[in-house]
Picture 1 (cartoon, helix red, strand yellow):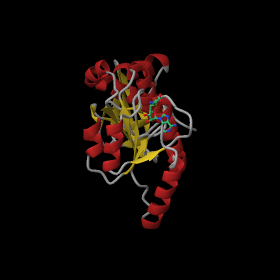
Picture 2 (cartoon, protein in one colour):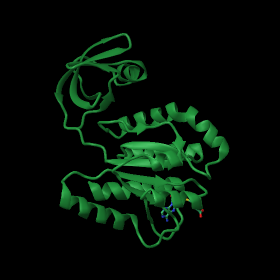
Picture 3 (cartoon, helix red, strand yellow):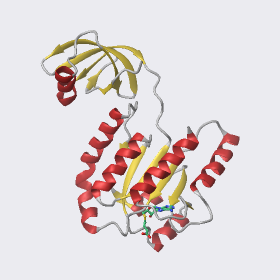
Picture 4 (cartoon, protein in one colour):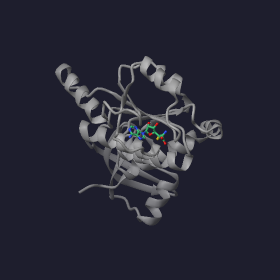
Length: 246
Ligand code: SAH
């Protein structure tokens, strides 16, 4: 039986509370009563919880036991900023697909007005991932960073396997690169390697950006011969990666 899951607003070792909209929904729509059981995400724990009491718009829970939480995928998505409605749809889908971290990046062909507006959208994007985490019953909430320049993101020190989704690439497919990665890492440790996937803006990557990726050791990979929209490429790459890692 899968219990409905809530993300706690406050918590300690043995108790948690819901306030605000979540609590109002639980009280008014789901007619919460003491004794009802739910899963509560409290920090990095997921707990089997029982309603201990309801006062005003606050629901208090006793945390009964830890529920084994499925870890997020060790995958970071560098997502070039593109039309916000489609980008926010991609952010929600990436969350459902288990992405661990999203770094919005300003690419050369990111439209200027979107680049300027991006920093003000961070809180909205964080709300989208929080709601999508709850809906998809994730035990964790992906990190969404403030938008940074592509150069800063690409040059950041990392031991991850770094794959750039390149629509012109024909030799290496994403599945081929992941198979090689998994074979290599399986021979070393049973830890899954962290994987970073970079998806470009509607206009694609500029030539100097492809050179930058290359100079920083990113491997271009293809999702096939058709040109996908950025949001299609992002969820396809995550779905393929999730399927191969899980
Ligand atoms: N410049 C392209 C559109 C770019 S699509 C055009 O000719 O219209 C936006 C991003 O999605 C690309 O930068 C790339 O990261 C990714 N993408 C789209 N199709 C892809 C494919 N077949 N293989 C790999 N990546 C792809």
